[in-house]
Image (tube, rainbow, N blue to C red; front, side, top):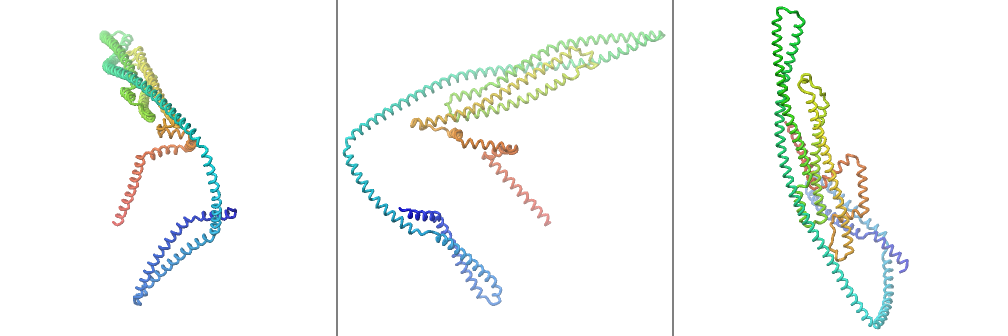
Length: 570
């Protein structure tokens, strides 16, 4: 094909490709349908106009004047319709005319292409004749090479023997792999059985320890309750006796003052006729004072006896409190240990078949959720306990830092040794509370470390599952039919693809940068919107709430409008 023919064909082809005859056909079909519809509408309107004209002609002269405007309006509408129809037809014709006028004539290009194809067919026939001659020469040569069939058959036999040997080797490897897997499974079953036996023993031992600890705790609680009751009774009796003693001491001091005043009066005045009477009165006062002193001594002895009784009770109470604290620590330690339900769940997991990696991850996630909930509850209780302890410690410190001087009325009643003993008891209680607060903080720290360990273990398992997907893909590509049925889970396959894809990493980094550029309000609204829109139930609830709200607003507006209308009418 010469260059002029090729350029002509190229020009025609490019124009008709850009002309897009198929779209033009669709456009022409639409225009034709529109013109047909306009034609049918014009026929209907003409018939209606003819009927209207006939009815107008039948009217008398007085009615024609009234019916003339509608008739003129109908004629005007028909004229407008015909004008639009003519414009539409003209536009369609001129658009088609313009497109076809600029189109090159395809006849010369087709004639040149036909001549070129005829020339090519002639050249092809000559090539075919040459190829036929070459095939005949090859047939003659193949006839001389019939002896090579024996060599080909020998090679085929060797290939078959190699294939059989390869199949036997593959079967041997598969059998060895199966035996290894069976041995590994048997060893794992033995280990699981031994572990189940050990866990069963540990579970029975833990149950026994828990029952013993609960029994000891109940016994000590009852003993503590009885000791508290006895101590309260002794303290009440001691308080009553101290109050009575204070009243008697006040009266004795008053009598002593009166006696001293009388003695001073007797020593200052001279003897008179009334000395005998005053001396007799003084003797009576001294006798009364002696009786009061004897009564005070008796009360002091009673107070000492009461204190002697209270001291063993306080010692017993301190011992009981120490035992209670020890049991509470032991109970807290037992609560931190795995419970019977946890041992049973672990035994059930051990007896069950080993789950796939996805099931193991789901189980670990559920366990992590349970551990997180338990840890949050433990942390909340520990915080409440710490706040209570801190409030108690502050109250005790305020009480200790308060003035420790004994009031004047109690200076003769309470000894300094009693004040020191009470202060020592309060300080010991404060120290014990501080120790318990520190122990609670250590427990909370241990729980947080445990939660962090569970989170790290979950991330490690997820990474191991992604690595397992990579290994499975490698084995599926390298093992052929032996590992053809191994398919990694879609979840971890997706994670593997995301890890290996640079576009996913770039997208993740870009999303992190966009999130970092947000203001605090948007950062707060983004997780809320994701949480609401990601769950079908929340989306449905939001739609129901919006519908209810719009309905309520519409009904309220309608009610107010109705009330306003009623009031206006009235």
